[in-house]
Image (cartoon, rainbow, N blue to C red):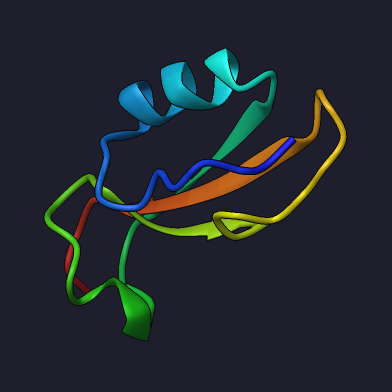
Length: 72
């Protein structure tokens, strides 16, 4: 299966998209200081996913998604 792109979604929406694709999700909340690649995401949106979109993975693979909640 190919990992769908969930960057820019809220984690709850990302979980639905990944679940429909036969994949799991592990949510990583960042509570500031935020990662340098988070600066283009709105508060609470996914800004990084691993494995990245388009990667071929077995069914059931868990995708890590990162979102931020505080400035620091």
